Length: 549
Image (cartoon, rainbow, N blue to C red; front, side):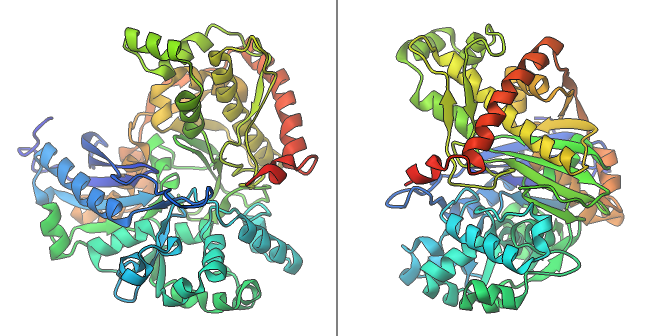
């Protein structure tokens, strides 16, 4: 690792990104956007599942706290930079991933009487136990013609905070009443570093149906959902701040523990997908970014406000100043491929991969790459973890059509890759129907660098050139860009997010061009996908709901 202790005029920022199973930190030079050091740490406890319903997804808050201190200390130590040259820290996390807190900021799950209650724990974004509650919110909002429905695509998603809060109020009212503050985990980590209770409006806009004009859903609406929710606003404590703002500064205790200077700026927290936009050098409208990892999030900034069915939200100033940021995505991408590799690959494939010193994924991609689009006669629906966009239904499940006794593992693997690309095409079609067009398409995330075969499938299915981000850790890098804006010019940062993006963000050199004959073949196959998509997803046959347990 390069030692930079002699480069005293260069300033640095740290970006810390919390994913589903691990966190990663990067230390970045503000003048060039060069990543000087990085650190990755997995959560020791992973996702808690013991004695929990299948739709529950909980985590241990201590994993997040210890990972924060560990990764930040590691990048500072490895870089050799001086503490005074680190001018800012930015933090993002999956969302809505939140926890209940006591008045003194202690997590409710730390109290002995609540330690084993699942509703007192950190609820991960992929917790789908609140689907019934999400449906109730949607139904009431439609009945009352609530304005916020337009901004969330006409349907509330079970992954958001409000359905999960309604779940707590209905199923664990003692937890709801004992809670002083429900807080997104990234806001909580900012609080640990600064002592300041803040609430970034990026989270509130996408996960709590807030907007600049109307604020949160009305007290009357919330009371009709559940009497306990009438005082919800009192349980959402914290100074409300916008992205790119300085949320506070490192306390002496936090600075000593991190090896940094007291008073270092800490930026407003962000959602992991949204924060990745600057990493690709995106600083204006009509450019879409796909963040491909465990799941997929797609962000598209536009000057226009339009209704797009089933999106995960549309919030102004949530990513780039002055622009509406539309979010959509898929609940299973990398998770889907890992499921197949972990459960459906025969021993002879594992043996071949081991003998050749390559991963199972690489072996399957190699074998699948010898197939032409549509050759296997398979088409799949990518709903192994429900559908996020544009159906917003966590009760949907996966499907593969066309299996025969001759079907090989690589054919199924390719069908799953194609299914996720088809799912993204369905999302873009909804945007286009709403008059929102992506003139350029970018991609970042772990899969982008690991699986070029999949990226070519995406380019072929979408019929678009895909530009990649040069940042290996796109979200962590993006968090560092916002940290540079929060630090400000006087400290060696930037006056605005736009300035920071233009100086630090960079598109990668690798791009994927669609292959015309593949695009034509996928156009035909996509028609079959869309028939299945609409039949099973829009009421033609609700067998997936009936089988769900």
